[in-house]
Image (cartoon, rainbow, N blue to C red; front, side, top):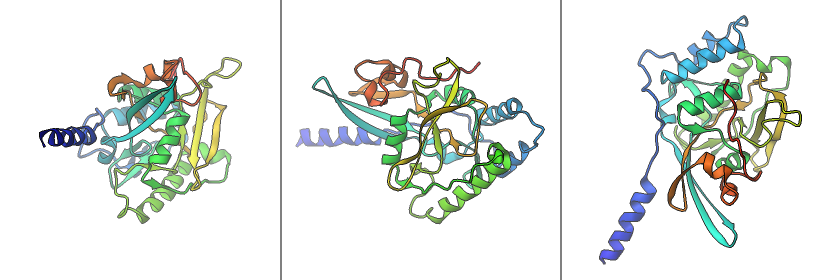
Length: 278
């Protein structure tokens, strides 16, 4: 009987362990998502200056409260006739600025995304992680693309897509409250062996935007330079700290491992799993 009780207690402790973002508390007078998007909508504002404003806003803690509780994902692989398991934690949604009631999804260059990830002791996802997030998502949203145009990199189009996604989200809020794992509403900016192209040029690598049948709209793609930031780009963070076979490790160590990389990658080892921030 004591053994059974001990096992039940161990299982409870293991499954109830939560992880939270390490970030400042959101100030009571912080900008709402609508207010923030308006503050960066001046067409004369350079991309560099816009991204400095974005980073400072995130660093100040101006993200929705429900983003702070990370969601656990588990996976298992068989390698060399041995079973390996992993537990890792991800943001419940793509990163946004503002409050629970009014938030703005914030596309950004991969260099800034990496800087934000470093701030929060996190990593950007891989293609495999993007797929795992979609498979585990309690809320699988239907993609709502906007027809391609030169305006797709502008704040008004960011705002338009934000409204489209939030309208869809609110229709199902009762069944899937804030904090539920969400996917299907944006593409992922991912880390990959294709961050640099064949010419050694730095590229933004995007993937995902899964449809209801589970197939991504966007295959792994590195055709854009890093100054291309459009409305469809989402920034999802994965906590650096992971547990492999019950022992603490990191995303970076797993991705570099010849044996364990398949827990997080379908490209083989990723020797440099990050974007340069300078």
